[in-house]
Image (tube, rainbow, N blue to C red):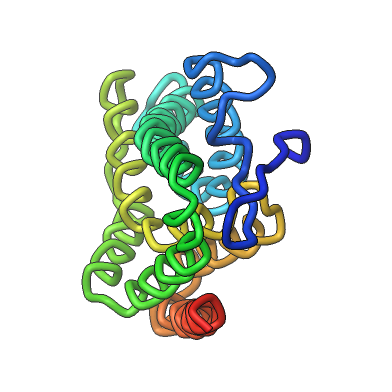
Length: 228
């Protein structure tokens, strides 16, 4: 990640090289590198909250008499990671398109810090929404489900469904990470802790609104600073 480099932009910010073909790369090579990095990053970030679900799959499959309960859990994990990898492609396409716009039009490039701050602000406010609460409730239900797929295709489908719910639930935190910089390891760690806490801790602790309050305040301050 540290070797990706960055391009200084009008407005005093840096455009990460992850969105650009560097060192003679083709766009295909650039997209492949991004998806590989994206998958590795998502596995590291989501594993703490995914592990209890896969363990539950394994335990339920074992009690149901499955011959390879661990294999079914692994297949569910494959389905989960496939969905996250698929999400990486539109993220790259949008990011690469915006990067090209910023390179081609310096006047628009100057809006980069304000646009990133606005995304952080909106993502923070989304943590208070009913939509977010429903997504977290769906994640909680998936951890507590009593039935586990007992064949290969069903396990893949279950993992994919879990991955889709996870992607939707993580929309706000992931938007913050993308806007703040995918290469920022400290920000990645903060998002990982927030995502893990809001899924695994009791709902009455209201982790999502708490992180939303802090993120919204940070986004507002960044927006004011970029406009001032």
